Length: 125
Length: 164
Image (cartoon, rainbow over all chains, first blue to last red; front, side):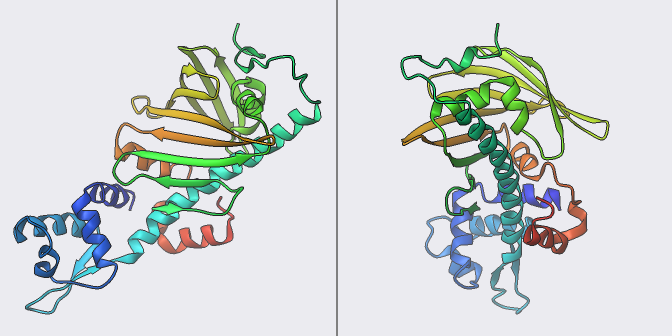
């Protein structure tokens, strides 16, 4: 699963593949339909789709002739979940920082004529 | 790939083209106060977390090129982090960041404190990792819930917030 996430991010690092994914959010499409707007060959698009498929982002339908490409939306849900999880931890950290900052204010306002030099305070010698 | 909530909660985005994580967050403080909370070791140790862990500052040499190291501990397990204050400007801190468990993975962090006036400051934090794998490891890091346990459990944890 963890490896899948890396595959997903790598797969989406390419602009053409991001574009393919964006188009597949609208509807399933065949390889030929997907290749149409690009100047590259259908084979090149097939290679891009293979990368997306290996990452679990898309699947190919089983209908014999056309085999439409389908976007697997839940993979995006997983990514969103990871990122949201990370965001929540950052938010927790910053709420602790809020508390520290509130305390700094309580200590009393700085005299405006005294410049703060935070880089030397209580730390570096 | 981007999750946004209304202010004042943190906003995060993971760049699709570069191994970067960006976070912005507003604070009810001046840029100088926010800067101080990042550079004063005693203050920093109080908020850097993670939750439920004690942070002990080991090295803290606040100057351009000075190094820092702290250890976060819980239940006898210690996690060391270290890096270098590459540049401390008037409203920016540029530093490197490494978890000692993966000592060759280094992130370059740029913190910018934007004065919004009226004693409010917006923090722009950017972490540039040296690979997508490294960045994604960061996104995954700190998970109390094993990935193997699947989407469903993760979703539950996220939904009720107990794993945050």
